[in-house]
Image (cartoon, rainbow, N blue to C red; front, side, top):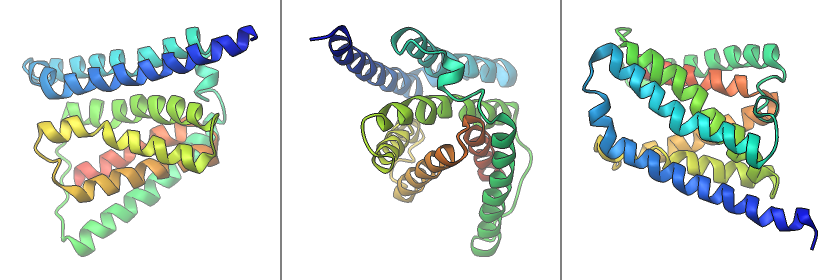
Length: 219
């Protein structure tokens, strides 16, 4: 057996351990630690939340790519590829998706729009959600699963994992029984995966993810 063949199971195990630890730690944070994070006011609490999310989401991915996959995280995550075109696609698709969400809310739900958003909304719901969640799910998980199976299967599994990571906060906020949200988030995960594949840039999905959250917040 070659050195590469011996190393492959170890890498698979490391990725499996990473996923298990990641989901466990984030669940613990969302179900227990969150109430302590938001004890420090309207500015310090969002900053602490952003810091905690960076430590749990971004830092481990960066280290895993660098030391386990032995790759440059910036290159692996496609953060340096098609940056301008990715941002342009992200803006265009964000406006398209946002327009659709607003139109649906206005026509079918007679929704009232509100723009009194907090610092926490801007920092964590828009910026950190788009950046951290896309680095983990489309940047790492989708690409790794796609190495072993067809894209549509890898995208489906990634979208399912993306859905499951929302469960702890839904349980905390007593929203888990809103079953339509399960299908919606799963479909959004599929959409983000396809955008990543088509554009070849993580910036496109980072931007559209944050914009999607923004439009949902104002509806």
